[in-house]
Length: 179
Image (cartoon, rainbow, N blue to C red; front, top):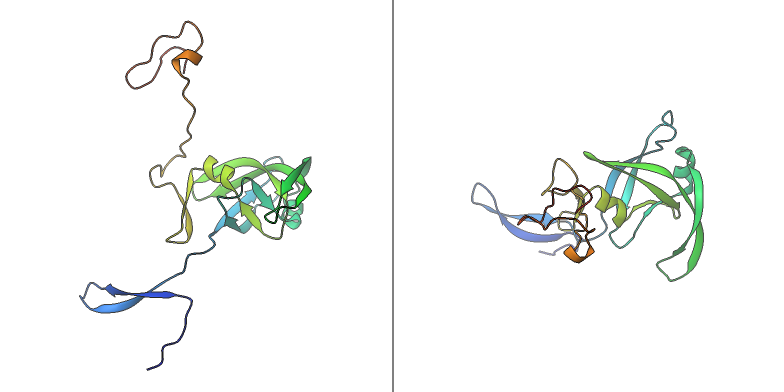
């Protein structure tokens, strides 16, 4: 019997009926997620539904020009970006943009660049999202399913303002202005 070449990997899998069968596993690759993009300064503007490439190696939200036009975004400034091939380019930085995914949202600006929406590390961190490469999906952090968790830097005792009491064993201070 000739075996066909396929891009899906296969492995033996035991089912509930204790029979063996092949399970197809998608190969590792790019992760896309469905997002809603909105312009919070133009509440009458319709939300734009997009499929975004989730890329932890990128920093910002990047959108194609047609998305910026649909959202009626205004140019806030120009930014210089370094492209994957090392070239530098000046691009419009537009905003504000509200990004929604599942039960999360964040507010950010977006660089107008490329032909697809790119969700970078800053908006993913802001919404407390995690990439799950094995499942090829972007998800809400399962450790914080209800609210996004943000980490704020704790000041060392030497950096605390004078007059701050020492920390409790949990590392907390009850005095206002003291971390």
